[in-house]
Amino acid sequence: MSDLEGTRILVTGASGRIGAVAVPHLRALGAHVTTLSAGENPDLDADRVLVGDTRSQADVARAIEGADLVVHLAALAHRDIAPPYDVYSTNVVSTFNVLQQAGEAGIRRAVVAGSINAYGLPMNRHEVTPAYFPIDTDIPVDIADWYSLSKHNDENTSRMAWRQWGIDTVTLRFPHVHNEEALRAQAEVFRADPASGLREAWSYLTTRDAARAIELALTARTTGAHAFFLAAGNTLAPYRTEDLLKAYAPQAPRLRRFVEREVPIDLTPARRLIGFEARHEVALPTLDLPS
Ligand SMILES: NC(=O)c1ccc[n+]([C@@H]2O[C@H](COP(=O)([O-])OP(=O)(O)OC[C@H]3O[C@@H](n4cnc5c(N)ncnc54)[C@H](O)[C@@H]3O)[C@@H](O)[C@H]2O)c1
Image (cartoon, rainbow, N blue to C red):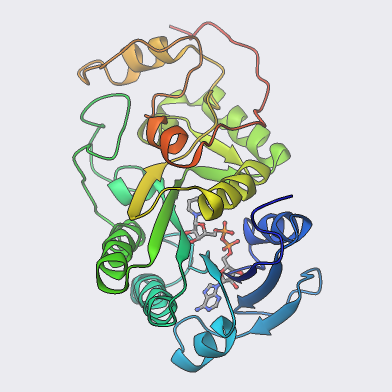
């Protein structure tokens, strides 16, 4: 029996790419799920389906009523999806509103969708490379866009909520998350233009694994406020990681050697804190990097 059997979970942003897989996953474990999303989605099947705005105090209050746990996925999930003011304000106000109300209601844990962009480099238009590999949560941050800034600041909000109200928060720094078919298309982009994936370390996660990470983050024994990277163990580039780093980041120190197509991101916190290991990898051949 799952620890989530019979728990009541609010999932915001449930009609999106990750939510659409996470909601059935949580329900299959016996959780009673309330969803709060900006728009109607005829495919969304939950115990209570609400349409509302995560920036609205009234909408979140209605949605959070009776919840034991919160999964906060709602966001404008890209820099270019809306004007800068809308992306930044939607994301930071929503996270503050959801965590404030969850904290004040005495909810014991919130799992928050963070992003690899919290360290700023993947969307940075300047000539910056990661300070070292594997990328970890101590790596120097260089933020040059409002989406990354919102995800960075959401982590401060999560820490604040834990200190203020004692609500455990787990922020999952997702990489590129998609279904296998879309990930294969992305792999083709990295094959043709490997440099384009450097600052996200060619990382990815399937939506199925993202849903499982949410489950583990909800049930892990850990307490406090945590934020860490998640990714599949291998990259989405069909080349050896050592070859990629030698070619595209020759100045960046490598703190250890990478085996074959191992993703150059530190996944230790994900293993240690929630016991996460990706189960669904996109199978790719390993090719020699063209000179
Ligand atoms: N998919 C990825 O590759 C990826 C990578 C890193 C981080 N993330 C993060 O994971 C979360 C989910 O991503 P996704 O890919 O499912 O995004 P998505 O765009 O597919 O879904 C976002 C959801 O948020 C809802 N939403 C947006 N603004 C809202 C508001 N004001 N009120 C209520 N609902 C609102 C939308 O209705 C939608 O259901 C986001 O926080 C995103 O930033 C996603």
